[in-house]
Length: 370
Image (tube, rainbow, N blue to C red):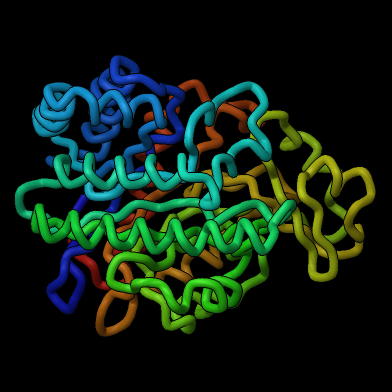
């Protein structure tokens, strides 16, 4: 969906397709016609934005077979779908039975991550609608913190220089600017926006910046204004809500301790890499816990649990409630529908409800659908 900010600029609202398990081209086409098109109909909009996730396998296939890339663009248009942003964080196997720490590999010290990201940028220039000249890609926050060495840091610096050069050359050749957003996340080398400022202050800010994930920021107890204060461009916002347990209510979180994804958990004075570790005594029970478990934006878990939806509202106001938008790409990213306790049978309906909730929040800030 496209919305007009009061300053006249366009803000793109999409949902992230990493919620779907498809990792090859037939599966992606099936998810477009079977899920995304239905979400669009449920919302009653002519055009629905997607934050498309392409696994390394699918991206390589599209790069090697230009006809398939043209066919994908045609399918998007025929279904009333458009892509201005890609999720380039997961590399492959995002819906494996057990993923956990593997989601951070390959990291930015590995040339495979560089090649994958530059391939995504080429693909995105071909998928952008004719009237859009700027696309974005979100990516991991350099690496998981374990094993971070001077040698890895040097390799990352070299790869960031190469990706910036590649994006500059791509813009010169195609007229399409692709911007890459590094996504701070608890437990990673770039865990907070302040760490992002320290580690990314010298990169090419015409093409490299931040992707702010509202769930991650809430789990980190960051001020909603922190991202805007870094001086780094905010190329994308991932609209997401964390799971919150008030003091003494942590037992209710046990239903969310599942095997696929990593659920970093933080309190005011403690941190655990995963929810199971926190529940085993890793965090003080007399403090509120915030859990990296993306929960639906529009709903609430069974009491006494709550979500960080109030935090998301404040972040939206910071980024989009001013005289000009601080980002123009907003991606709803709830990828956990299938591992939620009592997972709903009708996921497309849930995605549509989230997007409807989000456009209501944006309308309250003065943005109007176009």
